[in-house]
Amino acid sequence: MLYDVIIVGSGPAGLTAAIYTSRAGLKTLVVAGTVWGGQLMITNEVENFSGFENGILGPELMEKMRKQAERFGAELIFENATSADLKSKPFTVTAGNKTYEGKSVIIATGASAKWLGLESETRLRGRGVSVCATCDAPFFRNKKVVVVGGGDTAMEEALFLSKVVGEIKVIHRRDKLRACNFLQEKASANPKITFVWNSTVQKILGKDRVEGVRLRNVVSGEESVLPCDAVFVAVGHKPNTDIFKDQIDLDQTGYIVARDGTRTNIEGVFVAGDVADNRYRQAIAAAGSGCKAALDAEKYLIGT
Image (cartoon, rainbow, N blue to C red):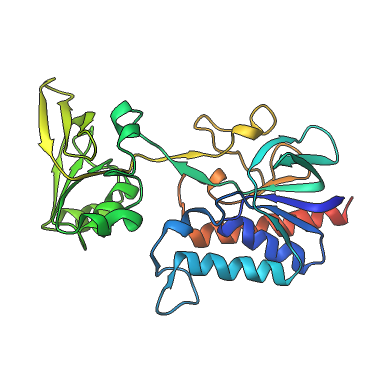
């Protein structure tokens, strides 16, 4: 079966694109992934998505988007895309040992949280090591936790944690934060949040659960141990572009390069959401780019 549009990804960008393409009468396939819905599926309260005056739970918002796309006729498969051939037409995307053909493709695969790369981090993942404060903060009510990072994500995690945990130490490898001024000021004014500057985590301590971290001061070289009950890693994101390498133009950090809005270097292949956005990373921005990609794909198909 030949689809008009294959959308790879099912976060706000992918599902918004699916709403627009299917509503336009285009035969649309969404390769949603085995874990669908993007990062909002692990987000608690969403208060800055237009139209919800009292906020909405992240999973609830994504469920509404999915149902809306399906109402207009979008087909979703809950398998991970494992490969894609964008060098010839029709384009093909393989998922779940089946290959699908499309006249156009919208890449909306998003970006995933980065880890520190420590053996101890991997061993203790789910036992006090986390990349999601909204998911795991309740497990550490009134406990001492560490947040690793100095950007917007780290400050947002620390501020969310401050509603639940007892004490937060932010570990940052530099002597000043990279986060926006608003978040810096808000975190600095929070009595539960303090900072450990010029330091990196060398090892996460504990056998069956997190008991502390071994730190190294990058200026003096001195090492120290900081007791804690959990470590929240917030050091950035990696765009999910592995299956498109050597076909789609990427920037030096691996994000897809968008031209003239949502177009890529391949005619008929479009991009939307965080996989091409290392700046805003907001659900509503991703949804907006999904709309744009859908409209661009529709215009392309009309001309073919």
